Image (cartoon, rainbow, N blue to C red):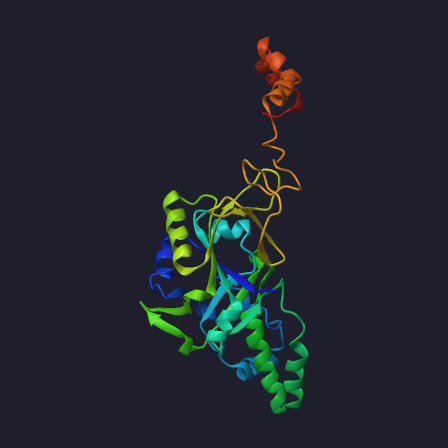
Length: 307
């Protein structure tokens, strides 16, 4: 199964990311600049004896600062669209992880683990290093702290489904005081515009996708399901399932929302006779015609103690 990862970005970032037609440029950050201030609290429990904590600090030393950029494992995370893609007006770039590893042999990937507090995994290693003093325990402690520092976050961020890329200094370029990782453009497999994206953004992204041989989709919010779906330029519908974007077998002819073996979704199936029948069965309409609806709500609100 192809490995796909997803980068959320606002429309203003899009132009910078694709300013070089042969590359997709992504900003990298160092751990000291991460947006979760508690990430480095998730290595060991810092409530230790001062002597042991001082020993830990001396062995571990200063955490190596390596260029890091973050992806998600899903393109349908609503908070991600809201926070990182300009309130659904931006773009998600689908990237082939396997191709990245072929171009950059030293780059490493890892899923982020979400914790409420430091796990107990490193404590025995710390105790052995302190109590026995063998080199291998010191090395194991350093590697364990490195992994925990780079690949753990507090559980409040778990909705991101984050996957991190750690690069070497030689993999990135210094551009305008930023660390930029330039991915060859064939690593980009799809471009997805948000449900609130403007016509201009959609046209720009569609043209970029066509130019670089990538797929183009627009994300849509349906009425029948809490899962977003996608529509391509030919009005075919797609769903994100099992880590990939799949073409739907059936979808509504009108709104394009995926359906189960039907040509129309429940909402688009509503016809005029359904609406007339519903109106005739709504007792509030009778009160309204008699001019009693406003007083009815006043009475009911008063009796319930609510305003």
